[in-house]
Amino acid sequence: MTDINQLDEKALVALLQAGQQAAFEKIYALYRERLLGYIFKLVKIEEVAGEVLQEVFIRVWTNRASIDKNLSFKSYIFRITENVVYDYFRKIARDRKLQTKLVAAATSDYRHVEEDIIGKEERQLLHNVMEELPPIRRRVYQLQKLAGKSYQEIGQELNISSSTVSDHIQKANKYIQQRLRAIRSTYIFLFIWIWRFFS
Image 1 (cartoon, rainbow, N blue to C red):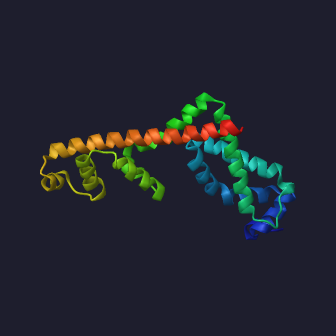
Image 2: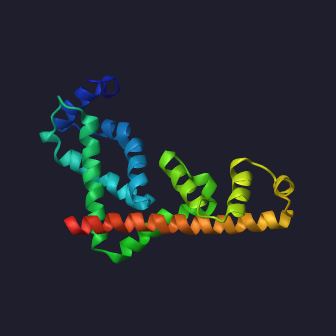
Image 3: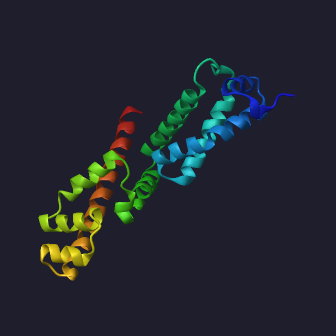
């Protein structure tokens, strides 16, 4: 009897094409976490990510006979994933409730903005928003959030009180969070509008 765990991916795909449930379950185990993380980054809602993942593997099983085992299965399954996600966004374009839910999910992570800025593009976005702050507030924010200085150290350096430093930080955080929410919402609705236009 063939040991599924000893087979390479190409052999697994061949067994999947033959309708072997064990091969399907092994492929699911191999790709589940990677796909789920990728989907969640796109849809921002854990429940939806799980539903999309389920649909991806339903399509893999349903179309197993047409899989070309000589081509990259990884590319194949990620292409299916992207198609299912696109279908989800087309559905959003026709459903205002889903639009509201997606925007809420995409903007909820900005309560602690300095912890959520990840990647080059995100850092650049934060930098651009920081540049909109009044000069003294921007400097206070940079010293505290980026240089890691205490309120007292900042006050001494800029010749202002610690309470004034605190006020600048609070107002800077509030402004940055609001601007990032607005920018993200604009990106999401633009994406939705594009899909509505081409759907």
